[in-house]
Amino acid sequence: MITSRILGLGPQSSLTDVARLAEVELEKTHGPSQRLVAIAPGIEVRATRDGFLGPFQSFVIRMHLAGELLEAIKAIPAKASGPCSVVEVDGLYEFRCDGTAAGGNAPLALLCGLLRLPEVWHVHGEGYRQERLSIERLFREMAQRRASDVHLYPGAPPVFRVDGATLSASELQAVSGEQILALLQEIAPTRDWEQFAKENQCSFNYHQLGEAFSRVSAFVKAGVPHLTLRFLPEQIPSFEDLHIPRSVMERLGALHHGLVLVAGMTGSGKSTTVASLVDWINANKSLHILTIEDPVEFVHANKRSILSQRNVGTDVGTFQAGVRASLRHDPDVIFIGEMRDPDTIRAAIDAASTGHLVLTTFHSNTAAEVVNRIVSFFDPVERDLVRLQLRDSLKCVICQRLLPKKGGGRLPALEFLFNDSRLIAESIQKGDSAGIRIGMQQTISESKIFERSLYDLVKLGLITMDIAQAHATTPEILEQMRLGTYVPPHLERIQHHTLE
Image 1 (tube, one colour):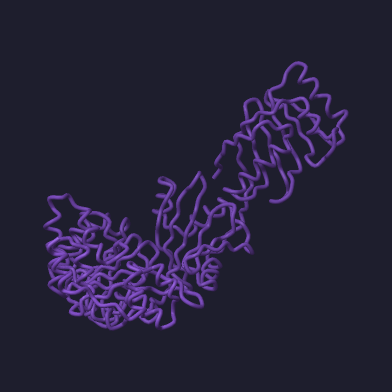
Image 2 (tube, rainbow, N blue to C red):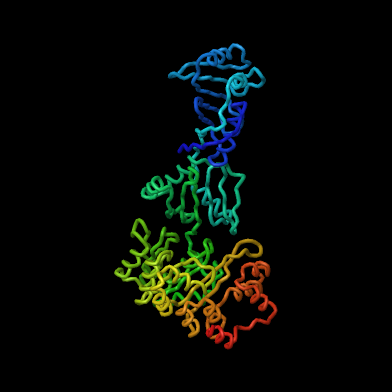
């Protein structure tokens, strides 16, 4: 995969400097190479070295030459301090020389003294690292480092995401674009490899037997490939592993119908939480669980239930088509990987309203905002109907934020919105996020706001108060809890809010 870069190097007096500057820039995006090619009008430079580091050892410069300049360049070998030659090839003249010779009589110095070098060059590298990257070693490195992801891009060693931070593994060798492409072609299904070749991006699931599953995402940036692998353990984590209250999750798993949403920002662990809930249902109930994912992430084996996992793109065309068709497949539980468009949302609500338990994920920072974020996908004329359907079908929203834990690692702060009171149901129908949040704080509801979860984690000594304050939706409420002065909003405030 040769990609050329256009570099404006400014006036240079030496081709050695041209090669050095071009090498530095190419290495940032492509990794080190054994050969460098720089082309400008009337001249082509090819620099070569034995390894991937150090100065280039030989140069071949191809030029259009005539007249006095040609004669002057032909005279260089007789007076140069290092070996060089001038030969004619296909109507062009090639100046070949040792690039390591120094001094004023060095071949390159004598040549550059006769030329006015261009300021702009089209450059690319050749002979990048070809050693095979071991996918098994990458998985083992992720496991040993307790990394959630690894990023591969040319010119740098693998970069691991540990506890939310990206850490470069400087002790490992920098990888090249050719190595990344070879690894991608090795692990990608044919369909996804062809999609990458056509669209410069793809995403799929990969299983390293005995290590883990992975959601693989590949894309091209500035003409070079990037590859990201998400670590998904073969053993699906339990509620205890995830620091999620078992009693609440079992209550949700026992539902027969309705909509359960797991919300949060990207990378907050939504998929893992849903996987643990699906695994509990699989182990404790005799049902048909059907999932529609893009791509399939956690892979479930049948336990007491039958599990049918469908991959968007290979098993079904779209999320919407998968949800619509699922109603004919006798499912009890439907998991939709993500609600990302109005048609999928509408199909999910319809399925939840017709006697199915529907689990799905959604991007939102708080549980109270979810209703209005869902409704915003629809045209204004549809929104009242969607809010009414959500009032009747929505059972629970779990919203989570991953926090750094004392001593290392991360754990979630959890917000639960249960549609279990008149105030919450009416606020859902009105699209009143503030009313939903007020209802969540009433003792009549099983709901739980983030601040309560954060304060509980502080009391258990799992996180610091500074971390809790930084992740609170309303830091003032958290401070009131710390001081023991917090009380839920009074009825008068609720009535006043309703009048407003």
